[in-house]
Image (cartoon, rainbow, N blue to C red; front, side, top):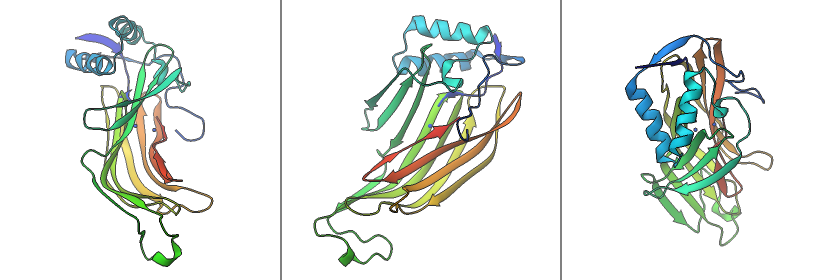
Length: 236
């Protein structure tokens, strides 16, 4: 067992405005982090090719009560996309100290359908220009992980070429603190805007409160669909 300062999140998936949950430079009270948790953290870092030297540096920061840069609300120094063996594209953000955050939309188990005729909801097919098409995803997993918090939900959505994309359903949300010293509350998943319009994209939002030593902080993970693409903005 090793002593490290209380943490709430290690994996990052997408705090209100420009504020961030872990804005301070250090943690509060010390807690005990199990050997299994330490192994899990290092396993995550290794999976995304974080060097042993950087892993040692990051673990030393925790032991000394210093927060990782991925928790401070600063901008990453690099962002790249990787393709998993199941075809899922993940966005990996790397921060100045070498810490990382990972997000993506897992379509590997989703049902996919495509066609050249678009009939979402009660939309009259005649209002769609000839040759426009769509791709519908049913059961897509939206997720964001850091070394300390994991959040995810499932969504059914449709990307429309030359028309208004939409989200038909969101469900099966899950948020959990991945280490000791934190808890999750007030979890809420809502369909903010089911259909893209001229001003705004379709949007679903998973909200939750991460409770730590200084109290609770509002966090979120979103699915935004519009203009023929999708994204997963987050704050935690």
